[in-house]
Image 1 (cartoon, rainbow, N blue to C red):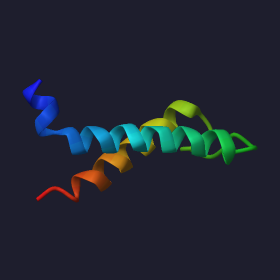
Image 2 (image 1 turned 90 degrees about the vertical axis):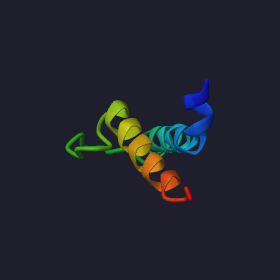
Image 3 (image 1 turned 120 degrees about the vertical axis):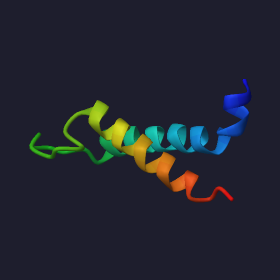
Length: 61
């Protein structure tokens, strides 16, 4: 529980980024299937989670 409270900003960033990545796949996606990130929902969600975690972690003091 202490880990979650200590890293709540990073965890929030990962969750928000994953949701954003999936929504990007769902609404924009890749019609041809040749795009490395947006061709599969797992890739897009994982990339979004990584970017969200990095972005939200940059706001830590």
